[in-house]
Image (cartoon, rainbow, N blue to C red; front, side, top):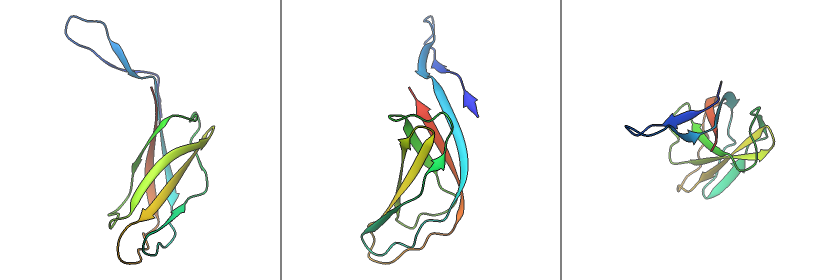
Length: 105
């Protein structure tokens, strides 16, 4: 999905752009098993239209069990997800379909 523009309008004022592009992608991701205080990065996920500097929001399919996930544009049209396990035990998140939003302001 590509939305060309989303705006915010204050009563009596012109619409102000909030973001100019929103790209929504779904991808099946199977995070690596993460030992205590370790991390992993996915391979590139195709996100057509994504550009370096765009903001990435992640929507995981299940409980993250304390694992932190960060999305970023790694190259034109490509997003990666970085996982970090700060907990005291090994965590192996299940494979699932993630929703990824790429936002350009």
